[in-house]
Amino acid sequence: MLLGVPQEGTATSILPGHRMVLEGRSKEVIRIVSVGGFGAILVTIIMLPIFSIALPFLHGILKPYTWIILLVASIYLTYNLTGNFRDFLWSLLLFILSGVLGWITFQTPISSGVMMMCTFCGLFGISTILFSLNDSSTLPAQNPFYTLNLDYNKFKSIFAGGITGAILGFLPGFGPAQGTIIAQAASGTNDNEDDDTVNFLLATSGLNISDCLFSLIAIYIIGNPRSGIAVYMSYLISEMNINHLAIFIFASLLAVSVSLALSLKLGDSFSKIMRMVDYKKLSIGVILLQIVILYVFIFYYEAPVVYMTIALITSTALGMLPHYIGVGKSHLMGVLIIPAIVIYMKMFI
Image 1 (cartoon, rainbow, N blue to C red):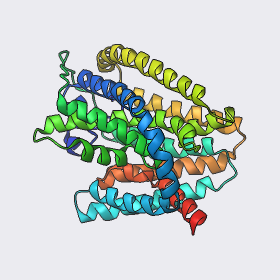
Image 2 (cartoon, helix red, strand yellow):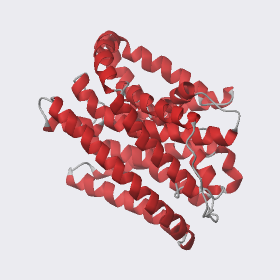
Image 3 (cartoon, rainbow, N blue to C red):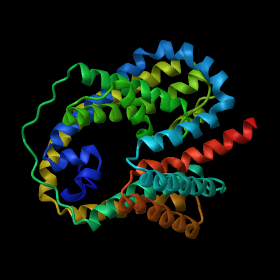
Image 4 (cartoon, one colour):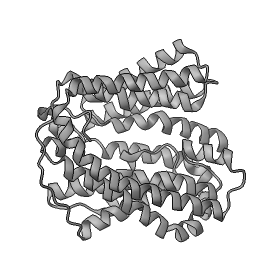
């Protein structure tokens, strides 16, 4: 929330969380995303019996048509995430270009984990902070007073985030932005723009956390891991049973509970500390840290340095384009969705 914040002049085209930070509401927004994530985990666990019955049946029926669902949903969600035809065409182009990048990079014999780390660092990490450096951003004074009153609409958004996280865990390649459109449709909208922003953040943070847990639960329900960590866990556990599922759920509850308390305390502290830190130097430091960590893994897995460097530069350049064009970066999730469409198409045609 406190990194990659652009100038106030671009506030209409930035993430809702960054917009609230520019309004001096960082403490409030940290509470919103923390509560949204915690609530969504509870929703996912409560709905687990229904998921266990419905999803294996749906998975068996829909699996041959997964590529069609992904294709239609991608075009529809891309259209919904854009305001006009010009933005739609640009978004579609970015979606296709990122998909081509994903297909090329993931066809290599290089470790998929390192390749994905490299691509996502460029598309969503380094490029975002680089753009904020170009804007010469500064963090405005933050309001020390904050309130978060939970009402019916907020509970509905938390519930929508939990359910949507399960849907994302079921559909390969879909990201939070696509899930947010589904969550918004499920939670409804409000006439108050500020309430809409809060409900948007509750749903988004909820579906992010719910997706993480459900990707592990999917190993047990449909026997198919839906995320990198889930794939790794499937290697460690040859046959997942109800005991493993119980451990995952308990560990998730414990982790999210601790995270809730820590994020509230640390969020309040960081909103004060960030005012005293040189924002530009900190951003450069974060970029360098990402690069150092990436190259540690590149050397550890003996990946070709030149190829990985070219992949990082290419993905960073592609990640910069949405900022200058004026469209959302979520369309770059084509990096995963298009390879998934091609793979499922090859399997069932």
